[in-house]
Image 1 (cartoon, rainbow, N blue to C red):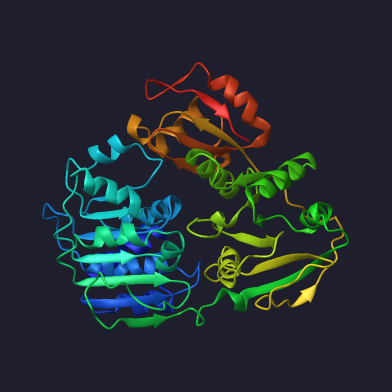
Image 2 (image 1 turned 180 degrees about the vertical axis):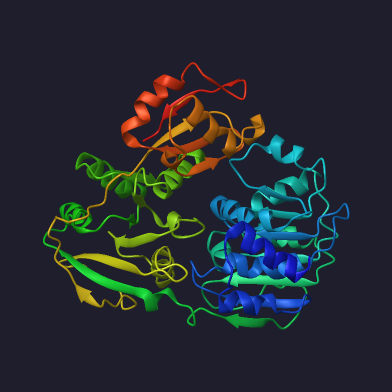
Length: 438
């Protein structure tokens, strides 16, 4: 693709008219060689590597041209949502666990130009003979440091052994890499380091909040009630703790969602959608939520438990102060608890438990059990809610459209009556089951 076409798509489809310095630098790299991009979470690195990837591609030629591997399903979905609308005239597919295998196989009836995948799922397709990657010329290993940490080294090696035609290789990482893998062409990498140049730390205030008791729940509730309205993630170190915190917040009347690896994939996706659309503006999460989630306008991060490593500290905090936004980091401490040396605070704060503009749920979410595979579009849903539900266009919030479902934000005070009113209606001559999620 030509640079001018990519730039035009970025502006028209993403609303970005001016690239940040890192993205401009990546747009200038040669389309042959090995590059390591060091960048913090939230700096716009997906778009940064997407530009040279797209520039390296020619017209559809009946074979896979580019491959992106990422360590989580959430990250794969996020990357594909950035790449797909920019890659006009080219086919992009996403492969990840928790997604029906047959649907992925069906998507290969026309050979894609770009594949975005988790290593394990991609290897599964290769072992079943669904794919030939011999003509891939561009490879991106996104969040390579995290992929190693999660134990994907062997899967990545087995996939990359099949990539015999590589010209352009891009690694991304939030932390410097000790070494590059020996299963890829031996080239001296060009390191493009924006890990400090665009660090969100410059836009963060790190605030210590002391808990008078070792059980920090009351302090957390007071802190959340003290904050101004916005989206917040609360990080804890264990699933059991996350479940307990979530239950306590809900009991206290705080609109909170839940996110950890023990949930089903659709439950995790729903939790992120309800955070983004304002239904549950507080999310309680393990460190699984510290990477690969596309969450706009997050106003604060709260460390209920101390992060287990400097990397965890960095990635948790990277959920706020993204791009050019400001953000606040709260660290709840208690007597006898050791604060790691890598955590430095700017000030202390004693929560009052009151705010002039408290965190609140601004919407409710309706769940439709039909989606893209049933030929339903966002426009269809908007028209349906206006014509059959009596809503004004301005009352319809975020619409998350998936293969076989859709989530729609609507006014809280109208959600229950909408479910009743729409129960007997058809959308595009299709009977849809509509329920309320939050």
